[in-house]
Image (cartoon, rainbow, N blue to C red; front, side, top):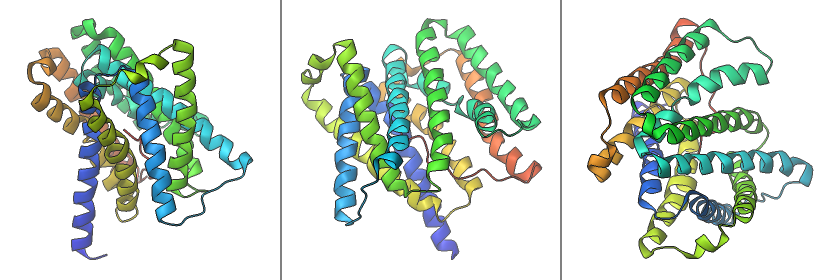
Length: 303
């Protein structure tokens, strides 16, 4: 592949990761509570993906037996987003994004367990470093205890659906998976709204929220997803893995620019964050260079 094409793909990947990082900022800007926010997001994303598939004239109907596992993974996506935005509402964007960085730890542990493979020593070492970073954040930012816990639970969900998506992508087109997962998320979040009695909150939407929700559903979900898949086909898995680790960095920088003082944290928080980011960035390096194993490209958590 010509070098100019590779450079273009790298720039597009960074744009995609920047958009993913902006997701957390939108969660802080939108006045809706977490569940109504997620409901609007998945509905808008479902409609935009349906329009995209229709525009491409793709026959995306699947038999019920094949559709069901994708819908179930979509429900997991809905739970992930609900926890993610709830964490933002009860803490800050920075706290949530750093908590979500523990995704690497959970994937390192859960993937070999689910796929019945041995956990590597390198995975355990990286995981312990991340645990120490999280411990420091807990120690110095205890007032955000609930936000940190829900952010970490969100990371567990993201890890699980990433592992399951790695299997699904071998059988189905990524756009099909995204569409049916959004439908599954719609069903799950609708049930959560019903059980929690928050249906009435759907009508309590500010004028500015409409624009933010459209950005969240179309740009940060459907567009970024399709763009991300496109560049993943042109770049190595290692380049993709390393670049996507910039998401919390971009997100925290954007949050600091937009929210200012609200996003300022203690020295302990930034120390813990640096330790976690160091471990996250080192993970693909260790897997690729020291062990000679490249990370498999998976459908990225659709922030």
